[in-house]
Image (tube, rainbow, N blue to C red; front, side):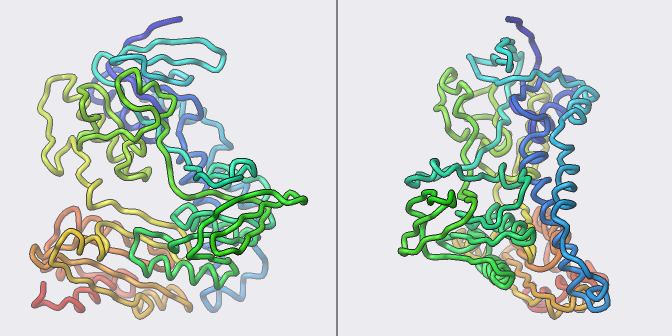
Amino acid sequence: MSEREYDLIVIGAGPVGENVADRAVQAGLTAAIVESELVGGECSYWACMPSKALLRSAAVLRAARDVDGAKQAVTGDLDVEAVLRRRDTMTSNYDDSGQVQWLQGAGIDLVRGHGTLTGEKTVRVTAADGGVTDLVARHAVAVCTGSAALLPDIPGLTDISPWTSREATAVEQIPASIAIIGGGVVGAEIATAFRSLGSQVTIIARSGLLGGNEPFAGELVATSLRDRGVTVKTGADTTAARRDDDGRAVLELSDGTTVTADEVLVAVGRTPRTQDLGLDAVGLEAGSWLDVDDTLLVRGFDWLYAVGDVNHRALLTHQGKYQARAAGDVIAARAQGTDVDDAPWGAHVATADHDAVPQVTFTDPEVASVGLTAAKAEQKGLNAKVLDYDLASIAGSSEQSDAYVGKARVIVDLDRGVLVGATFVGPDIAELLHSATIAIVGEVPVKRLWHAVPSYPTVSEVWLRLLETLGRDSA
Protein backbone atom coordinates (compact mmCIF):
# COMPACT_ATOMS: atom_id res chain seq x y z
CA MET A 1 0.00 0.00 0.00
CA SER A 2 1.18 3.49 -0.81
CA GLU A 3 -0.03 6.95 0.23
CA ARG A 4 0.01 10.16 -1.79
CA GLU A 5 -1.09 13.67 -0.95
CA TYR A 6 -2.65 16.33 -3.20
CA ASP A 7 -4.55 19.57 -2.78
CA LEU A 8 -7.54 18.09 -4.61
CA ILE A 9 -8.70 14.55 -5.29
CA VAL A 10 -11.31 14.02 -8.01
CA ILE A 11 -13.21 10.74 -8.23
CA GLY A 12 -14.35 10.19 -11.82
CA ALA A 13 -12.45 11.14 -14.98
CA GLY A 14 -15.33 12.02 -17.26
CA PRO A 15 -15.64 15.50 -18.79
CA VAL A 16 -16.86 16.87 -15.44
CA GLY A 17 -14.02 15.46 -13.35
CA GLU A 18 -11.45 16.47 -15.94
CA ASN A 19 -12.68 20.06 -15.87
CA VAL A 20 -12.78 20.30 -12.07
CA ALA A 21 -9.18 19.10 -11.88
CA ASP A 22 -8.02 21.25 -14.77
CA ARG A 23 -9.46 24.48 -13.36
CA ALA A 24 -7.92 23.80 -9.96
CA VAL A 25 -4.52 22.99 -11.43
CA GLN A 26 -4.61 26.09 -13.63
CA ALA A 27 -5.17 28.08 -10.44
CA GLY A 28 -2.08 26.58 -8.83
CA LEU A 29 -3.30 23.50 -6.94
CA THR A 30 -2.12 19.92 -7.29
CA ALA A 31 -4.71 17.33 -8.27
CA ALA A 32 -5.15 13.61 -8.80
CA ILE A 33 -8.06 12.09 -10.66
CA VAL A 34 -9.32 8.55 -9.99
CA GLU A 35 -10.94 6.44 -12.73
CA SER A 36 -11.96 2.78 -12.83
CA GLU A 37 -13.01 2.72 -16.49
CA LEU A 38 -12.02 4.86 -19.48
CA VAL A 39 -10.71 8.38 -19.04
CA GLY A 40 -13.24 10.58 -20.81
CA GLY A 41 -16.24 8.95 -19.18
CA GLU A 42 -19.77 8.18 -20.25
CA CYS A 43 -20.17 11.01 -22.75
CA SER A 44 -17.09 10.12 -24.77
CA TYR A 45 -17.72 6.39 -25.11
CA TRP A 46 -21.32 5.43 -24.29
CA ALA A 47 -23.53 8.52 -24.50
CA CYS A 48 -23.24 11.90 -26.24
CA MET A 49 -20.61 11.18 -28.86
CA PRO A 50 -21.52 7.65 -30.03
CA SER A 51 -25.26 8.35 -29.99
CA LYS A 52 -24.85 11.44 -32.15
CA ALA A 53 -22.59 9.50 -34.51
CA LEU A 54 -25.34 6.88 -34.90
CA LEU A 55 -27.87 9.63 -35.64
CA ARG A 56 -25.94 11.97 -37.92
CA SER A 57 -25.56 9.92 -41.11
CA ALA A 58 -29.29 9.29 -41.37
CA ALA A 59 -30.06 12.93 -40.58
CA VAL A 60 -27.86 14.09 -43.46
CA LEU A 61 -29.47 11.57 -45.80
CA ARG A 62 -32.98 12.71 -44.83
CA ALA A 63 -31.99 16.34 -45.32
CA ALA A 64 -30.78 15.61 -48.86
CA ARG A 65 -33.95 13.70 -49.69
CA ASP A 66 -36.05 16.66 -48.56
CA VAL A 67 -34.59 19.01 -51.20
CA ASP A 68 -35.54 18.72 -54.87
CA GLY A 69 -32.43 18.45 -56.99
CA ALA A 70 -30.48 16.80 -54.21
CA LYS A 71 -32.87 13.91 -53.69
CA GLN A 72 -32.43 12.79 -57.30
CA ALA A 73 -28.73 12.31 -56.60
CA VAL A 74 -29.38 10.02 -53.63
CA THR A 75 -29.48 6.55 -55.15
CA GLY A 76 -28.42 4.33 -52.28
CA ASP A 77 -29.44 3.40 -48.76
CA LEU A 78 -27.67 4.09 -45.52
CA ASP A 79 -24.46 2.06 -45.16
CA VAL A 80 -24.90 0.60 -41.68
CA GLU A 81 -21.36 -0.78 -41.43
CA ALA A 82 -19.97 2.64 -42.32
CA VAL A 83 -22.16 4.29 -39.68
CA LEU A 84 -20.84 1.91 -37.02
CA ARG A 85 -17.31 2.44 -38.26
CA ARG A 86 -17.74 6.21 -37.92
CA ARG A 87 -19.16 5.67 -34.42
CA ASP A 88 -16.01 3.76 -33.50
CA THR A 89 -13.88 6.60 -34.84
CA MET A 90 -15.82 9.10 -32.73
CA THR A 91 -15.14 6.99 -29.62
CA SER A 92 -11.45 6.55 -30.49
CA ASN A 93 -12.22 2.83 -30.77
CA TYR A 94 -12.79 2.85 -27.02
CA ASP A 95 -9.13 3.68 -26.40
CA ASP A 96 -8.52 6.44 -23.85
CA SER A 97 -4.81 6.98 -24.51
CA GLY A 98 -5.48 10.39 -26.06
CA GLN A 99 -7.43 11.48 -22.99
CA VAL A 100 -4.65 10.20 -20.73
CA GLN A 101 -2.12 12.26 -22.67
CA TRP A 102 -4.32 15.32 -22.17
CA LEU A 103 -4.31 14.74 -18.39
CA GLN A 104 -0.54 14.45 -18.42
CA GLY A 105 -0.19 17.65 -20.41
CA ALA A 106 -2.52 19.44 -18.01
CA GLY A 107 -0.44 18.39 -14.99
CA ILE A 108 -3.12 16.12 -13.51
CA ASP A 109 -2.07 12.77 -12.03
CA LEU A 110 -4.18 9.74 -12.99
CA VAL A 111 -4.75 6.95 -10.49
CA ARG A 112 -6.48 3.97 -12.09
CA GLY A 113 -8.84 1.93 -9.97
CA HIS A 114 -12.03 2.13 -7.95
CA GLY A 115 -12.08 5.02 -5.50
CA THR A 116 -13.93 4.99 -2.17
CA LEU A 117 -14.11 7.55 0.59
CA THR A 118 -12.57 6.22 3.80
CA GLY A 119 -12.96 9.32 5.94
CA GLU A 120 -12.53 13.08 5.84
CA LYS A 121 -10.45 14.06 2.77
CA THR A 122 -9.23 10.48 2.25
CA VAL A 123 -9.82 8.21 -0.74
CA ARG A 124 -8.70 4.60 -1.13
CA VAL A 125 -8.10 3.42 -4.70
CA THR A 126 -8.19 -0.30 -5.44
CA ALA A 127 -6.61 -1.19 -8.78
CA ALA A 128 -7.71 -4.04 -11.04
CA ASP A 129 -4.77 -6.12 -9.81
CA GLY A 130 -5.77 -5.61 -6.18
CA GLY A 131 -3.15 -3.00 -5.41
CA VAL A 132 -4.23 -0.26 -3.01
CA THR A 133 -3.29 3.41 -2.98
CA ASP A 134 -4.45 5.81 -0.29
CA LEU A 135 -4.91 9.41 -1.38
CA VAL A 136 -5.10 12.31 1.06
CA ALA A 137 -6.53 15.69 0.07
CA ARG A 138 -5.20 18.82 1.73
CA HIS A 139 -8.27 20.83 0.76
CA ALA A 140 -11.04 19.03 -1.13
CA VAL A 141 -12.46 15.87 -2.64
CA ALA A 142 -14.78 16.21 -5.64
CA VAL A 143 -17.17 13.36 -6.48
CA CYS A 144 -17.76 13.32 -10.24
CA THR A 145 -18.91 9.73 -10.71
CA GLY A 146 -21.99 10.56 -12.80
CA SER A 147 -25.06 8.40 -13.16
CA ALA A 148 -26.09 5.04 -14.55
CA ALA A 149 -29.23 3.77 -16.23
CA LEU A 150 -32.07 3.04 -13.81
CA LEU A 151 -33.58 -0.44 -14.09
CA PRO A 152 -37.22 -0.39 -12.92
CA ASP A 153 -38.62 -3.13 -10.72
CA ILE A 154 -40.50 -5.01 -13.45
CA PRO A 155 -40.93 -8.76 -12.86
CA GLY A 156 -38.62 -10.73 -15.14
CA LEU A 157 -36.84 -7.70 -16.56
CA THR A 158 -33.35 -8.48 -15.27
CA ASP A 159 -33.73 -12.10 -16.40
CA ILE A 160 -33.99 -11.06 -20.08
CA SER A 161 -30.70 -9.08 -19.94
CA PRO A 162 -32.07 -5.76 -21.19
CA TRP A 163 -29.90 -3.15 -22.82
CA THR A 164 -29.18 0.22 -21.34
CA SER A 165 -27.90 3.19 -23.31
CA ARG A 166 -24.40 1.70 -23.06
CA GLU A 167 -25.25 -1.43 -25.01
CA ALA A 168 -27.33 0.54 -27.51
CA THR A 169 -24.63 3.08 -28.36
CA ALA A 170 -21.88 0.44 -28.49
CA VAL A 171 -23.93 -1.95 -30.63
CA GLU A 172 -21.96 -4.10 -33.08
CA GLN A 173 -24.89 -5.71 -34.91
CA ILE A 174 -28.20 -3.94 -35.40
CA PRO A 175 -31.07 -6.13 -34.14
CA ALA A 176 -34.00 -6.85 -36.44
CA SER A 177 -36.31 -5.43 -33.79
CA ILE A 178 -36.03 -3.53 -30.54
CA ALA A 179 -38.52 -2.49 -27.87
CA ILE A 180 -37.73 0.65 -25.90
CA ILE A 181 -39.18 1.17 -22.43
CA GLY A 182 -39.24 4.93 -21.83
CA GLY A 183 -39.96 7.96 -23.99
CA GLY A 184 -37.38 10.44 -22.74
CA VAL A 185 -34.35 11.77 -24.58
CA VAL A 186 -32.48 8.45 -24.65
CA GLY A 187 -35.52 6.48 -25.79
CA ALA A 188 -36.48 8.97 -28.50
CA GLU A 189 -32.94 9.31 -29.85
CA ILE A 190 -32.26 5.56 -29.91
CA ALA A 191 -35.62 4.97 -31.60
CA THR A 192 -34.67 7.50 -34.28
CA ALA A 193 -31.23 5.99 -34.79
CA PHE A 194 -32.21 2.32 -34.81
CA ARG A 195 -35.15 2.82 -37.14
CA SER A 196 -32.81 4.54 -39.58
CA LEU A 197 -30.37 1.63 -39.22
CA GLY A 198 -33.04 -0.91 -40.15
CA SER A 199 -34.63 -2.08 -36.90
CA GLN A 200 -38.33 -2.42 -36.33
CA VAL A 201 -38.82 -0.19 -33.29
CA THR A 202 -41.52 -0.03 -30.63
CA ILE A 203 -41.48 2.65 -27.91
CA ILE A 204 -43.51 2.10 -24.76
CA ALA A 205 -44.00 5.52 -23.19
CA ARG A 206 -46.91 5.76 -20.79
CA SER A 207 -47.11 9.57 -20.80
CA GLY A 208 -45.86 10.21 -24.33
CA LEU A 209 -42.48 11.35 -25.57
CA LEU A 210 -40.12 13.94 -24.12
CA GLY A 211 -42.01 14.74 -20.98
CA GLY A 212 -40.84 17.93 -19.33
CA ASN A 213 -40.65 19.71 -22.67
CA GLU A 214 -43.44 21.72 -24.23
CA PRO A 215 -46.13 19.16 -25.18
CA PHE A 216 -45.90 19.98 -28.89
CA ALA A 217 -42.27 18.85 -28.95
CA GLY A 218 -43.07 15.26 -28.03
CA GLU A 219 -46.11 15.28 -30.30
CA LEU A 220 -44.11 16.36 -33.36
CA VAL A 221 -41.39 13.79 -32.66
CA ALA A 222 -43.96 11.02 -32.14
CA THR A 223 -45.67 11.90 -35.43
CA SER A 224 -42.36 11.81 -37.27
CA LEU A 225 -41.39 8.46 -35.75
CA ARG A 226 -44.76 6.96 -36.65
CA ASP A 227 -44.40 8.25 -40.20
CA ARG A 228 -41.12 6.33 -40.39
CA GLY A 229 -42.68 3.10 -39.16
CA VAL A 230 -42.00 3.25 -35.43
CA THR A 231 -44.77 1.98 -33.16
CA VAL A 232 -45.31 4.46 -30.33
CA LYS A 233 -47.43 2.98 -27.54
CA THR A 234 -48.69 5.41 -24.91
CA GLY A 235 -51.02 5.07 -21.97
CA ALA A 236 -49.62 1.74 -20.80
CA ASP A 237 -46.86 0.47 -18.51
CA THR A 238 -44.67 -2.59 -18.87
CA THR A 239 -45.78 -5.03 -16.18
CA ALA A 240 -43.68 -8.14 -16.89
CA ALA A 241 -40.90 -9.41 -19.16
CA ARG A 242 -39.75 -12.82 -20.35
CA ARG A 243 -38.03 -14.62 -23.22
CA ASP A 244 -40.03 -16.96 -25.45
CA ASP A 245 -38.84 -20.33 -26.74
CA ASP A 246 -37.11 -18.59 -29.66
CA GLY A 247 -35.18 -16.32 -27.34
CA ARG A 248 -37.14 -13.20 -28.21
CA ALA A 249 -38.15 -10.79 -25.49
CA VAL A 250 -41.85 -10.54 -24.67
CA LEU A 251 -43.10 -7.52 -22.73
CA GLU A 252 -46.53 -7.61 -21.10
CA LEU A 253 -48.29 -4.24 -20.87
CA SER A 254 -50.90 -2.92 -18.47
CA ASP A 255 -53.43 -2.55 -21.30
CA GLY A 256 -53.37 -6.32 -21.87
CA THR A 257 -51.23 -6.24 -25.02
CA THR A 258 -47.74 -7.63 -25.53
CA VAL A 259 -44.69 -6.43 -27.43
CA THR A 260 -42.18 -8.91 -28.84
CA ALA A 261 -38.69 -7.89 -29.97
CA ASP A 262 -35.19 -9.26 -30.32
CA GLU A 263 -33.77 -6.76 -27.82
CA VAL A 264 -35.15 -4.49 -25.11
CA LEU A 265 -33.70 -1.10 -24.19
CA VAL A 266 -34.55 0.35 -20.79
CA ALA A 267 -34.49 4.15 -20.79
CA VAL A 268 -36.64 5.29 -17.88
CA GLY A 269 -34.21 7.46 -15.96
CA ARG A 270 -30.88 7.58 -14.18
CA THR A 271 -29.51 6.59 -10.79
CA PRO A 272 -26.41 8.07 -9.09
CA ARG A 273 -23.14 6.15 -9.16
CA THR A 274 -22.66 6.41 -5.42
CA GLN A 275 -23.64 2.92 -4.28
CA ASP A 276 -20.06 1.73 -3.62
CA LEU A 277 -18.38 5.08 -3.07
CA GLY A 278 -17.93 4.81 0.69
CA LEU A 279 -20.46 7.52 1.47
CA ASP A 280 -21.32 5.85 4.76
CA ALA A 281 -17.74 6.53 5.93
CA VAL A 282 -18.56 10.26 5.96
CA GLY A 283 -22.12 10.00 7.24
CA LEU A 284 -23.97 9.94 3.93
CA GLU A 285 -26.32 7.31 2.52
CA ALA A 286 -24.87 4.91 -0.04
CA GLY A 287 -26.59 5.16 -3.42
CA SER A 288 -28.00 8.62 -2.79
CA TRP A 289 -27.86 11.75 -4.88
CA LEU A 290 -25.57 14.33 -3.29
CA ASP A 291 -27.29 17.58 -2.37
CA VAL A 292 -25.12 20.64 -3.01
CA ASP A 293 -25.25 24.41 -2.78
CA ASP A 294 -24.60 26.62 -5.80
CA THR A 295 -20.81 26.35 -5.31
CA LEU A 296 -21.25 22.56 -5.66
CA LEU A 297 -20.26 21.98 -2.03
CA VAL A 298 -22.14 19.07 -0.46
CA ARG A 299 -24.37 20.50 2.25
CA GLY A 300 -22.95 19.91 5.72
CA PHE A 301 -19.33 19.68 4.53
CA ASP A 302 -16.51 22.15 3.98
CA TRP A 303 -14.32 19.81 1.89
CA LEU A 304 -16.63 17.51 -0.14
CA TYR A 305 -17.95 18.60 -3.54
CA ALA A 306 -20.32 16.79 -5.92
CA VAL A 307 -20.28 17.90 -9.54
CA GLY A 308 -22.24 16.77 -12.59
CA ASP A 309 -25.01 14.17 -12.74
CA VAL A 310 -24.27 12.93 -9.23
CA ASN A 311 -25.84 16.05 -7.65
CA HIS A 312 -29.07 15.64 -9.68
CA ARG A 313 -29.29 19.32 -10.64
CA ALA A 314 -29.05 19.07 -14.43
CA LEU A 315 -28.08 15.69 -15.90
CA LEU A 316 -26.36 16.99 -19.03
CA THR A 317 -22.69 16.89 -20.00
CA HIS A 318 -22.46 20.56 -20.88
CA GLN A 319 -24.17 21.56 -17.66
CA GLY A 320 -21.81 19.33 -15.69
CA LYS A 321 -18.82 20.99 -17.34
CA TYR A 322 -20.31 24.38 -16.45
CA GLN A 323 -20.59 23.25 -12.83
CA ALA A 324 -17.02 21.92 -13.01
CA ARG A 325 -15.60 25.28 -13.96
CA ALA A 326 -17.30 26.89 -10.96
CA ALA A 327 -16.27 24.07 -8.62
CA GLY A 328 -12.63 23.94 -9.71
CA ASP A 329 -12.31 27.71 -9.37
CA VAL A 330 -14.01 27.92 -5.98
CA ILE A 331 -11.99 25.01 -4.59
CA ALA A 332 -8.84 26.91 -5.55
CA ALA A 333 -10.16 30.19 -4.15
CA ARG A 334 -11.02 28.62 -0.80
CA ALA A 335 -7.72 26.74 -0.65
CA GLN A 336 -5.75 29.92 -1.32
CA GLY A 337 -7.85 32.17 0.88
CA THR A 338 -8.94 34.49 -1.93
CA ASP A 339 -12.37 36.05 -2.37
CA VAL A 340 -15.28 33.77 -3.26
CA ASP A 341 -17.79 35.21 -5.73
CA ASP A 342 -20.89 33.25 -4.76
CA ALA A 343 -23.57 35.81 -5.59
CA PRO A 344 -26.04 34.74 -8.31
CA TRP A 345 -24.25 34.63 -11.68
CA GLY A 346 -20.90 34.96 -9.90
CA ALA A 347 -17.72 33.20 -10.99
CA HIS A 348 -18.01 30.49 -8.34
CA VAL A 349 -21.64 29.41 -8.66
CA ALA A 350 -23.77 27.37 -11.06
CA THR A 351 -26.73 29.75 -11.21
CA ALA A 352 -27.85 28.60 -14.67
CA ASP A 353 -28.75 25.18 -13.25
CA HIS A 354 -31.99 26.57 -11.93
CA ASP A 355 -33.85 28.18 -14.84
CA ALA A 356 -31.47 28.50 -17.80
CA VAL A 357 -30.50 24.96 -18.79
CA PRO A 358 -30.19 24.41 -22.56
CA GLN A 359 -30.75 20.99 -24.11
CA VAL A 360 -30.95 19.55 -27.59
CA THR A 361 -32.61 16.23 -28.39
CA PHE A 362 -31.27 14.95 -31.71
CA THR A 363 -34.42 13.32 -33.00
CA ASP A 364 -36.04 14.11 -36.34
CA PRO A 365 -37.17 16.83 -35.95
CA GLU A 366 -34.64 18.11 -33.42
CA VAL A 367 -35.91 19.60 -30.16
CA ALA A 368 -33.97 22.49 -28.63
CA SER A 369 -35.06 24.16 -25.42
CA VAL A 370 -33.80 26.44 -22.67
CA GLY A 371 -35.39 27.95 -19.58
CA LEU A 372 -39.01 27.59 -18.56
CA THR A 373 -41.86 25.92 -20.35
CA ALA A 374 -45.26 27.60 -20.34
CA ALA A 375 -46.43 25.21 -17.60
CA LYS A 376 -43.40 25.96 -15.40
CA ALA A 377 -43.80 29.70 -15.88
CA GLU A 378 -47.40 29.37 -14.71
CA GLN A 379 -46.32 27.29 -11.70
CA LYS A 380 -43.89 30.04 -10.75
CA GLY A 381 -46.70 32.56 -10.87
CA LEU A 382 -45.12 34.70 -13.58
CA ASN A 383 -47.11 37.19 -15.58
CA ALA A 384 -46.06 35.36 -18.72
CA LYS A 385 -47.07 35.56 -22.35
CA VAL A 386 -46.63 32.53 -24.63
CA LEU A 387 -45.62 33.29 -28.22
CA ASP A 388 -45.87 30.56 -30.86
CA TYR A 389 -44.81 30.60 -34.49
CA ASP A 390 -44.89 28.04 -37.29
CA LEU A 391 -41.30 27.66 -38.45
CA ALA A 392 -42.40 26.28 -41.79
CA SER A 393 -43.66 29.75 -42.73
CA ILE A 394 -40.19 31.32 -42.35
CA ALA A 395 -38.46 32.03 -45.65
CA GLY A 396 -35.25 30.45 -44.40
CA SER A 397 -37.09 27.24 -43.56
CA SER A 398 -38.56 26.85 -47.03
CA GLU A 399 -35.11 27.49 -48.50
CA GLN A 400 -33.62 24.79 -46.28
CA SER A 401 -36.16 22.04 -46.97
CA ASP A 402 -39.12 21.28 -49.22
CA ALA A 403 -40.79 19.38 -46.39
CA TYR A 404 -40.06 21.55 -43.39
CA VAL A 405 -42.10 20.92 -40.24
CA GLY A 406 -41.37 22.87 -37.08
CA LYS A 407 -42.56 25.17 -34.36
CA ALA A 408 -41.07 27.85 -32.10
CA ARG A 409 -42.28 29.00 -28.71
CA VAL A 410 -40.88 31.65 -26.41
CA ILE A 411 -42.10 32.65 -22.96
CA VAL A 412 -41.94 36.34 -22.04
CA ASP A 413 -42.10 37.62 -18.47
CA LEU A 414 -44.20 40.73 -19.09
CA ASP A 415 -43.41 42.28 -15.70
CA ARG A 416 -39.66 42.31 -16.38
CA GLY A 417 -39.85 42.48 -20.17
CA VAL A 418 -37.44 39.57 -20.70
CA LEU A 419 -37.47 36.05 -22.10
CA VAL A 420 -37.60 33.21 -19.60
CA GLY A 421 -38.02 30.22 -21.91
CA ALA A 422 -37.71 29.07 -25.50
CA THR A 423 -38.37 25.86 -27.41
CA PHE A 424 -37.62 25.19 -31.07
CA VAL A 425 -38.61 22.04 -32.94
CA GLY A 426 -37.46 21.47 -36.49
CA PRO A 427 -34.71 20.14 -38.76
CA ASP A 428 -31.18 21.21 -37.75
CA ILE A 429 -32.60 23.57 -35.14
CA ALA A 430 -29.87 22.95 -32.56
CA GLU A 431 -27.70 25.88 -33.60
CA LEU A 432 -30.60 28.29 -33.07
CA LEU A 433 -30.68 27.55 -29.35
CA HIS A 434 -27.68 29.50 -28.13
CA SER A 435 -29.18 32.82 -29.16
CA ALA A 436 -32.10 32.10 -26.86
CA THR A 437 -29.76 30.97 -24.08
CA ILE A 438 -27.86 34.25 -24.28
CA ALA A 439 -31.08 36.27 -24.25
CA ILE A 440 -32.33 34.44 -21.15
CA VAL A 441 -29.07 34.34 -19.18
CA GLY A 442 -28.26 37.94 -20.11
CA GLU A 443 -31.83 39.06 -19.34
CA VAL A 444 -31.79 41.04 -22.56
CA PRO A 445 -34.83 43.36 -22.59
CA VAL A 446 -37.32 42.42 -25.27
CA LYS A 447 -37.28 46.05 -26.42
CA ARG A 448 -33.57 45.68 -27.16
CA LEU A 449 -34.14 42.43 -29.07
CA TRP A 450 -36.00 44.45 -31.72
CA HIS A 451 -32.57 45.82 -32.64
CA ALA A 452 -31.00 42.35 -33.05
CA VAL A 453 -31.75 42.03 -36.77
CA PRO A 454 -31.86 38.44 -38.08
CA SER A 455 -30.24 37.76 -41.44
CA TYR A 456 -32.50 36.91 -44.37
CA PRO A 457 -33.25 34.24 -45.44
CA THR A 458 -32.41 32.21 -42.33
CA VAL A 459 -34.46 30.28 -39.82
CA SER A 460 -33.34 32.88 -37.27
CA GLU A 461 -35.89 35.22 -38.82
CA VAL A 462 -38.31 33.57 -36.40
CA TRP A 463 -37.01 35.98 -33.76
CA LEU A 464 -38.49 38.91 -35.70
CA ARG A 465 -41.76 37.06 -36.25
CA LEU A 466 -42.04 36.22 -32.55
CA LEU A 467 -41.46 39.86 -31.61
CA GLU A 468 -44.09 40.92 -34.12
CA THR A 469 -46.48 38.46 -32.51
CA LEU A 470 -45.78 40.04 -29.14
CA GLY A 471 -46.09 43.58 -30.50
CA ARG A 472 -44.05 46.66 -29.66
CA ASP A 473 -46.55 47.92 -27.10
CA SER A 474 -46.41 44.70 -25.09
CA ALA A 475 -42.60 44.75 -25.15
